[in-house]
Amino acid sequence: MARAQTKASVPGMIIASIVAFIVVYFTTYKPQYDAHNTYLPVPCVTYDSNVRTTTCTRRSCSGSGSRRSCHTTYYTCYYADLYVHYTPKDNPEQSAVISDGDYSSFASAQNVVSQFGNGTTPDCYYNPLNFAEVTRGRPSMTGGVIAISITGAFMGICCLGLLIFVGFILVKKIRESSWSCPSFSC
Image (tube, rainbow, N blue to C red; front, side):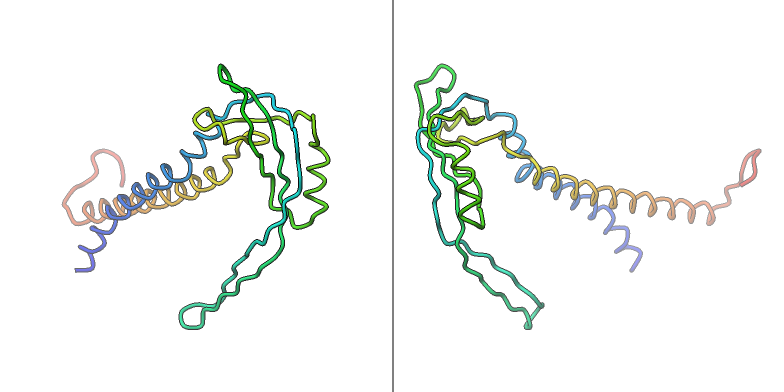
């Protein structure tokens, strides 16, 4: 009975890893890849900037099961908001807000605001499908690359397990059969 479960679990592991890869690809990597490759560079001009203060939360948990406890910490965070004008290719001028960062200090956010004051020209990238989406710098793909790497490693481990499993089955079949080596030594 244990052997039947083992034989069934290997294809199941392979199918599960393929499904996991597809899910991670379409939910994490592909949207980030598309954003990274579809955002277009555009000259933009800052017409206003300020530091926005808001309350942020951070949740941390410890323990497990019935001993699990979570704690929510409230803290003040700061965003450098840059108000920019830009002209997308073959379209009228647009206005957008670039909210930069989740800074832990007012001085850090103020530094960005000072760097990109009125009339400055930061490097901007806009989404041609939604002109309100503008970033300072090309969108990052770090999260997607990490997710794909972890999923690929999982798939590699599953495939290695399958190869080892098939190898053991073949060795067992050879030992059980009356097969003999031709002209070379086994």
